[in-house]
Length: 140
Image (cartoon, rainbow, N blue to C red):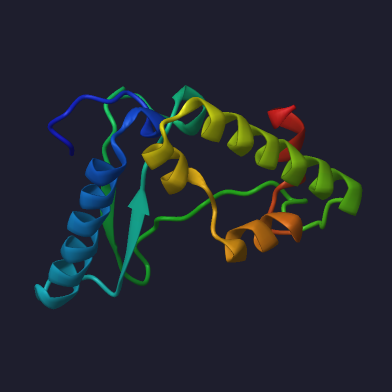
């Protein structure tokens, strides 16, 4: 948990966020080597009330996982139904436009951190079934 207060991930200094994930990476390694029941690790960061954030200070949960641990995600029945390409392209364009607007607002240093590398831009351009149609609809 960062010492500097930030209610949301976007409010967090990028270097502090990077450090938070470096600590989580180390914790994952330590948990696996600790002798405790840990065959995997989930990281969970709730960003906003709709994402189940109930403590409005950015923090990252590190969950040790093991077979039969009872942890899981509940997804709607049609979660793996591929949305129409037009919906995916529209969502990708909204993300690109939001990113462009943020780049214009932020300083050159921050904008550089925000500018996605070519690989990410191609991914956004080729969004596939990984995006949940219901989430896209709710984003509008």
